[in-house]
Length: 72
Image (cartoon, rainbow, N blue to C red):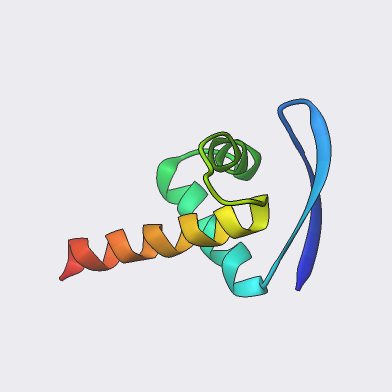
């Protein structure tokens, strides 16, 4: 697990994810042309998951699924 501190909506928080999810999140942000903090804030604001780390993992998984569907 890698833990990173960041600011979302004006407050500091930390997020612990596996390195693979951090790489996926960074790829997702790059493909959308947004900063990592902005993407995480967007995920946080729209989440149904009980915690942010779960919501991020699901968002990354869905993004990769969409990428696969586009190629398939």
